[in-house]
Image (cartoon, rainbow, N blue to C red; front, side, top):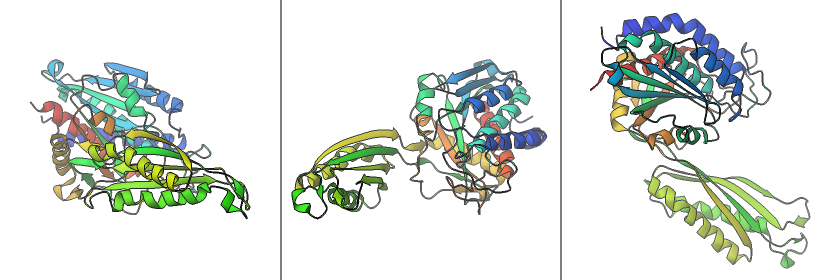
Length: 398
């Protein structure tokens, strides 16, 4: 019997679908923010506890869970270790899916990025593979990660050994705008790095009617906002994707007072590590120059966040091949362009080979991070099958 026999895998998943749908609805109804996933982690741990796994570690990197399935196929004891990852945290958004029976029960918090679907898909793969352990020639490690939205979860889990000894790792992301039954794959850069910066401009306060005796930090900040865009338009090659966005500008307390300070906060997105490393000094050079020209002082802080998500060519090919078998080759879409969004799955990919793919959740689905997003139940069995068969295929290879 083939380790990736579609009839066997699909029959196993079909039998699990009622409970997996219930799981997804429960998680959607009970979202928790990054680093507060206590209830979610307990729920997942309880589900895993019934699967006779070799190991279940809790409290990894916060509220993370690392569970290991030992296969029993011939040679499994000497086989490789393959990991699957799903994220668990929600976003600070008020859901407005009126009439939804399992709408978020937590005010101001919802699964607007589909991590309820990601967690359920990973649980589904764990349940499926536990029933097919006689076909697993090695180990499968299930990585349930907290704090993806605040980009700290993956790093903390790696520090605590979540992927020690793992040979390769795969993850998925539900993708609105792509029909259910399709996946998106891409070798190399898949998603961007995401770094942040803070600029405090120190001017000199004055009455709004007497600007000549002050140093207006709002004017200085406006010049900085405009000038920073030249890092993209005039200092970066047109074929090198970079985004510099000022997302916050805070200053002033009244209509007739020039404030003494202004604060700007923003993000930088890159698709190459080399470009990413250049950006802090480039941003500060512009800030320093403009502040000097306008007689202001400044304070500058820059934080590296999520690295570039770079898919390994071989693992991406594995996902593509399995996807063609599960969905048909016409439904495996090679993405022409990466996303300038970020994913801290990139942290794992800095350490071991792996790949993330997009799982279609509906061509007309609301966009990610919006108050009407809702991961499609119809995508669950496809995600579980792709996870399951990719793990089996990888472990069955020499």
